[in-house]
Amino acid sequence: MSKLKKTTTTPQSECPVSGRLSLRRMSIDTYHENVAYMHQDCEIYRTEGFKALSKVEVCANGASILATLNVVENGDFLTCNELGLSNAAFAQLGLPNGELVTVSQADPPASIQALHRKLAGERLELNDFRAIIHDVADHHYSKIELTAFVVATHRDELDREEVYYLTQAMIEAGRRLDWKERLVVDKHCIGGIPGNRTSMLIVPIVAAHGMVCPKTSSRAITSPSGTADTMEVLAQVELPFEKMAAIVRAHHGCLTWGGAAHLSPADDVLISVERPLSLDSPAQMVASILSKKISAGSTHLVLDIPIGPTAKVRSMPEAQKLRRLFEYVANRLKLSLDVVISDGRQPIGYGIGPVLEARDVMRVLENDPRAPNDLRQKSLRLAGRLIEFSPDVRGGDGFAIARDILDSGRALSKMNDIIQAQGAHPFDHNDLNLGPLSLDVCAERAGVVSSIDNFQLARIAGFAGAPKVRQAGVDLVKKLGEKVELGDLLYRVYAQFPSDLQFARQACQKSTGYSVGNADDVPHAFVEF
Image (cartoon, rainbow, N blue to C red; front, side):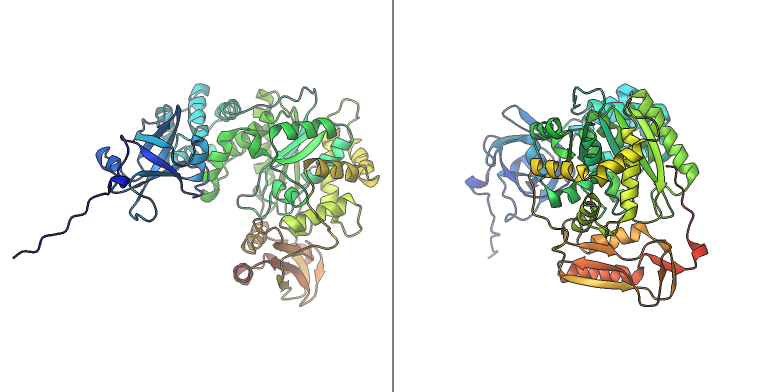
């Protein structure tokens, strides 16, 4: 007698209701990508012919999103009558858990043909970029399609007119602020230099001078700290636009996270694939920076391009080429731009990581003798260039004005006003609450510090836990050109957790990021202040 094979049926409670599924937030961070999750035994999944990585449209109550489908095999993770959404997708759809939604095959994004033409090497027009960026900002592209666009526009794949088109399209895709002021100033660095927290000094200096400087900054993605991460040690940075605007009107400046203002939203989506690929093409850099600044209402911008052996830009010809591209696009967009080429041979200041960088900033503001002089001097020079945008200031006088504002304590007073207005956090730079675990990295020979690897030190600080662990990071003791003896402390690594310290230790064992040699080995500085 043959044994009957037991069959299982999906319980009625597990069946979709009238072709609809119950919405469920999965609490999965997919970083700016809309991802939907369905069980492999879901009736709709089978009848619609969905496959993993299919593009689907989720609809209910007049709201809809496009998402990339992932398929779940485990019923404990997701049941057959549920549709799961990643954090990004759930937030964009804006419906509550349990809402009944429909799921269907999605049409390709309207701009996909323009993307295909770019992949084939064709030149695109403004309307092509508008269509692509509109779909990017609305999360209509999958990560694969985003990657294709980023690669197609990498390096010299865009001419300067196309870079202008891309920037204009990114501005139009989001909100554009208008401060009703003739002169709205800002400063930006192209990045790659740890500890370079000049913005947190420039804003209170120029605001104390009476200039409007609404600084909306990003958080770190691969670096040990962004301006927003460091400012968050001192005050709240995630503010609604209305509160940010009120602070700017009252104090002429702010230091906030820019994500809440919906400025150039396509930029954050593109960054989500650029960073993992380590792609930072000139075209994307120009479009990213200028679209954010113009969207934030800036009329005048000082742009810092550091040059150094381990900086993003490593030679003067490369810096000049990038400068000309920035100037061309800025001119087309009616943005007054002053490009400064600065020393990028080593980190700025002593601290790398949110708490350590906040300490350096406050020491400069308080004119503390322990303040890093390189951070002070660079901030004064950049602030001076911004002050010289004022028609009442003669060219060359800006540095002295900025120095007087800092030395007099007016910059500190303005910074304290901004901190209080944004919502102060307790902080005492004389009694730092750093990670309880530490690692001393010492010189293995006597000589002169002949090179410092920006990238490696940033990696070490990241392994130690920065920026997520604010108290983690690297505290430098020796800088470029300084004499050291065998066993002298070069820097100290701080961590909160043993595993983080071990990761940092392993990175240090591969490379400390420091070279000790002769004075003649120190690389020449390209500075154009």
